[in-house]
Image 1 (tube, helix red, strand yellow):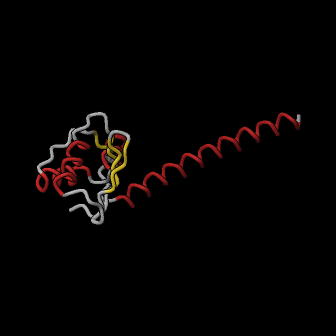
Image 2 (image 1 turned 45 degrees about the vertical axis):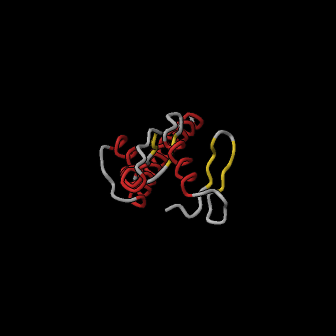
Image 3 (image 1 turned 60 degrees about the vertical axis):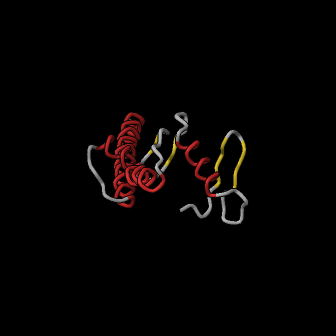
Length: 119
């Protein structure tokens, strides 16, 4: 399942690649300890699928906190974008719109300043 994994565990780094001498049993124990850590924030895309895979394939019930941009987007917009590209396009659209509004406001202020200067 895990071809290469670099874990920070108790301030030590464990290389769980196929070349390492850590057994599969020890690797699974490290994974379980990692995902049972309630102070850990795991950043990933498609949290539901990852959580389901951990449980079904490894018997791991993750207690760590997952940070998923899809869920954040849904909470912010109440709209469910289906993929990462759609989310990025949406956010870029909002940024460009806000920049245009700010530029428009700046132009209005500059015009007012120019009018006062002319009088």
